[in-house]
Image 1 (cartoon, rainbow, N blue to C red):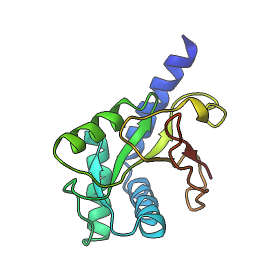
Image 2 (image 1 turned 180 degrees about the vertical axis):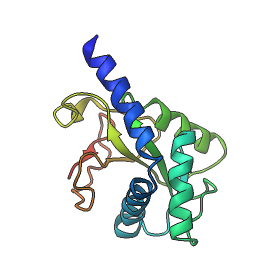
Image 3 (image 1 turned 135 degrees about the vertical axis):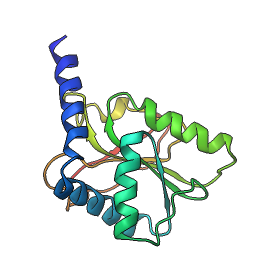
Image 4 (image 1 turned 60 degrees about the horizontal axis):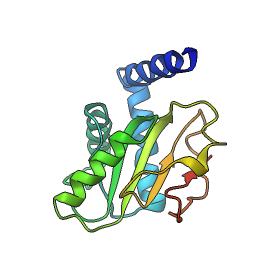
Length: 156
């Protein structure tokens, strides 16, 4: 039970972090860096209302960013525990006719030892999942491409 409560507390703290303009700017910069370095031309799509704030900040920094959910798309989330929000967003995009590559990008993983649990993560409809977890957001790891078991995680 302590692990669940700790995850909930951490999730709330991560969302509150977006209330700080400097932190929001840093997260938006990290999101744009992912887009520019690995997914040039991809649009954004929010997995949650909190992710909409993050995307809005990114769009203010780079007005060329599109957030209409068409074509190749980065599905943005603030926290990931089970992958449900990312999966639902991906399903909405597929149901609306999007046949492009869908990439999940989240700021924080809320489960303990998520790096060791990477083989058990699956998110339907998502081709790649990138978790920017930790303080060194400026360093990207190698992306793990979708395998038979689902989605791998990229670490830094």
